[in-house]
Length: 499
Ligand SMILES: [Zn+2]
Ligand SMILES: [Zn+2]
Ligand SMILES: [Zn+2]
Ligand SMILES: [Zn+2]
Image (cartoon, rainbow, N blue to C red):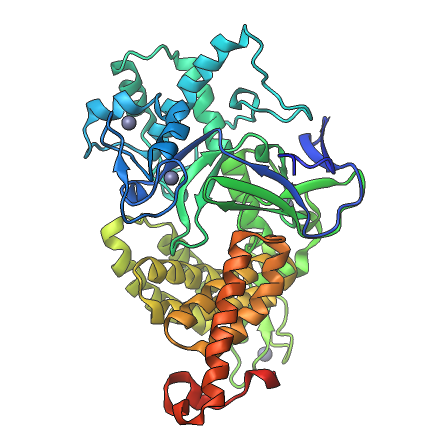
């Protein structure tokens, strides 16, 4: 397909600013856009074992002869990357291979210089937009006013004063205004670069000018999927002609108040999507606490979810007990503050193992008061899952991965694509641990959901189908030869065909 499907077009109005809308009826699972980055930078952790152009992980890579800092599969990848890497090569060289250089420093350096070069070319009529009006260069993208605080974005946010000193020291033809403008553009428009085969997924950051045209919605009708250099946008629900096509800039598993706070801070706007305006019941469930009455398994929900720290609570949905005049609201306030503190604590690298250990007691504390699908429980469980994956602790990761599903299944309407990703990750862990039968079950549930987001013959789907086929055949073999049934998971004796 063309990079941008004919089924969408750009629009512009006062309320929404610029956005993308459907020109015709769009079925779910339709790929609407596929894009390569304007600039892509690998995270420091992946610089030595991944190609700086195609992002693939390789045993043997060749260093760039110029800087000895970045690596490539071969000459072809290096040549393809020259149009971007030329802007940083000599600076990386003078900084030395072990230099303390942030990912955003590199992205900003390259983006600024590429922009200067483009401006020169502009007199020779280099296009700034494609035929459908989507931007090809970043300077027309949205800028936001505030930079996010350093502990809330995946890669460490560079100290911008230090970066500005760096730019000045290198004597680059960049004014302070241009520097600030691009800083804003990058803060508002960078997308994480992910590798679906990688454990920790996020391997870098990329600037994608066409995807950036999609506006945010907390219950979006499209998703964007990053897979190496390429990013794509796919519809996940039917979209009527003229309806806006939206993606979510945040993880959707959060109550309105938390989503709005992040959107304001990161992107400087107030979301007025249907979910933000109407879904008070969903918000209440995300804050569901356990009824403190002995032997009651009911839930107590906040009366006003937007005011969780000082608000009142509804009566227990089972025994009608009223907690408002008890010590429970104080206890909840205390717990909220503790978990907020825990989640916002700085995460640096050596700390990861300790972080994982700390998740246990925090969860025990939350379990005592919150329902297992409370969004705070999900946040901590999810964090533990990611850290365990990063540390390659498969058994621990599997336990936390499965616990994540409780919340995802309880808030399924908005979390369906998250559930698909979770099942895929859990299925792979089960396969790794030799739990083939469980893996088969998990992947069978995962595939139809994954097909919604990774439409068609996406590499991730192909990989998942292949894994399922392999596992299914091993399980069948084992079932066909009872002598082996004492080995590993086959002792369970269940027949996959009977599901
Ligand atoms: Zn390569
Ligand atoms: Zn180089
Ligand atoms: Zn919203
Ligand atoms: Zn009760």
